[in-house]
Amino acid sequence: MLTVRNLTKSYSTSDERLAVLRGVDLVLAAGESVALTGESGSGKSTLLHLIAGLDSADGGDIELGGKVVSGLSDSERAAMRRDRLGLVFQQFNLIPSLQVSDNLAFQARIADRYDAIWQDELIERLGLRALLDRYPEQLSGGQQQRVAIGRALAIKPLLLLADEPTGNLDEATADEVLALARDLVARTGCGFLMVTHSERLAATLDRHVHLHAGRIA
Image 1 (cartoon, rainbow, N blue to C red):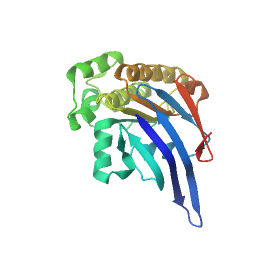
Image 2: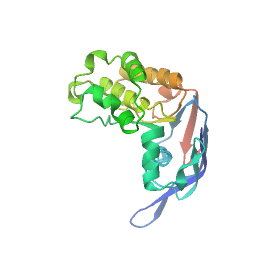
Image 3: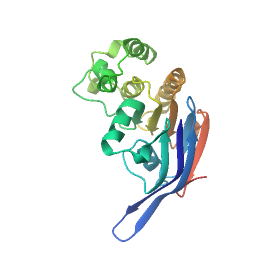
Image 4: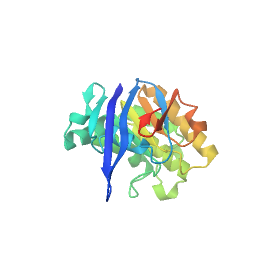
């Protein structure tokens, strides 16, 4: 479902070219959950951003569902993110002016993939029924992250990408939120790639890969 081959990425600093990814290879099957760990600066977030089409690689290939991401234009990458990817970050990125119900449905409506039955199941499974008319500022961190996960999964994406999704949560809430995410990912059959610093949380996913010095160790 996701194939990354020999991916490279460098950034220019004031006096040098800094290689962040030095030939990354990664394969992720449909329905598989993979944790990506590595020290700070190892390129974990860079890899996720390249897979999501938020940045362009210097070399190598990324294929998502048989489509070569690296060959897409900016508008085509934006359409891919809208229609085929679920994105969850450490910052919840909810829309402050929208109630929970509208935040949940936002991406699905834009992508023309809104499914009322699936939306209702997400609301129930994520425990959001009593919160639908609240605004993000009225929610706890754990509640906001559950809304963010629901929004990402509402389109039934091919791939859910999560960058430190529990970084702002206490341990108990992090465990609860990740358990819900794993359960819903299994329900949809999408792939799940999560960046985390927590070896404990990484161990709860199907597979654990480690990024070191720009390569999968």
